[in-house]
Length: 304
Image (cartoon, rainbow, N blue to C red; front, side):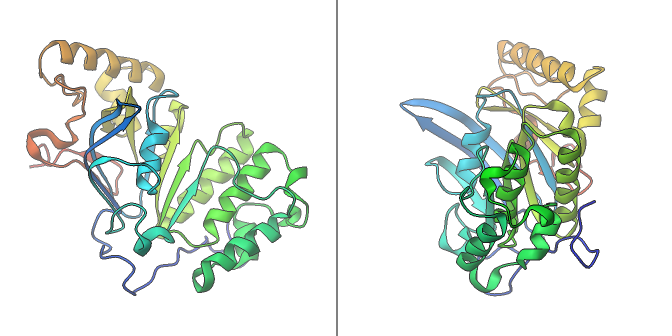
């Protein structure tokens, strides 16, 4: 498990000032009927879900299903229709912009600088909110490489440097787009340890992946296909409900039942897939689905 020099997980900085109106009991992210149109074509179709504070949610689905577009909405760089609240404010609002870390698929670092120089630069932008640079380097396992130029790093090492640049500002919400692509198993394990540490300290993480098995590392998962939310659940629950042996098989089962449900004009099956529009029953009967701290996204109606 990645820890700082004192042996403790990296802590998440929060503030009691007026940088947003969300309380710890509120979801870090609240999305209702989210739609995105690009080039006159709708690419996200009425998504509705919550991300509770201090949890890790996996955003899973094939490449091109809309995961990156959804993440761009949450960090405030994508136009949208619907209702979206992030840390108590609109996406991209000045009140929350510096409380969100966004790690894209491409390493967002200056490759002609060392990792330490990169972190010092991003820490200077964060001002008094910044974490200790050496602490963050230790958390992502780059202490021994800190004074080498990033251009000499492997792909996995560069991705860790990019993650460190996001962490140095102590984000309360961390949005990670395919962070483990191309990483060796040991580096992947280390990164997931770091993510678990951050969530334990109160940060909220949304982690996209097209690798279904990574769902087991998340408290809850959102399954997407073709811009729609097919299921909001946990990995074990998904296997149990579909009777599948693997998550890949379970995902295919959900797709088939969703397609059959749409043909059934609104009929909802046992997986919570609404037939009418392919949306998950996270808001069935008008109730909002919530990802609990135990990782289960529950329909408020079903929880009665």
